[in-house]
Image 1 (tube, rainbow, N blue to C red):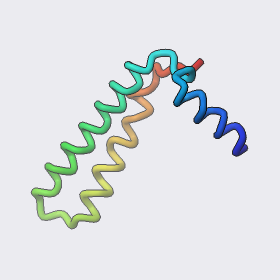
Image 2: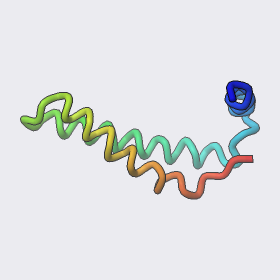
Image 3: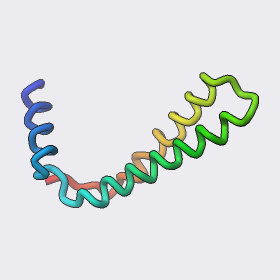
Image 4: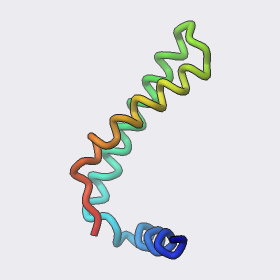
Length: 74
């Protein structure tokens, strides 16, 4: 199992794993931006800090399957 992970990591850093790396990083950037904006917005409320972290992690994490539904690897 570690061998499969190591092989995938080597392919990723050689640039041979993703069919469209621009699309992948664009979608990851969208998810990161939503998470950051949500964290900044919730930090202005009276919700405890651990709650803002949990909410701003859960919502973008649940959106990632929809953002990456067209993601293809070689």
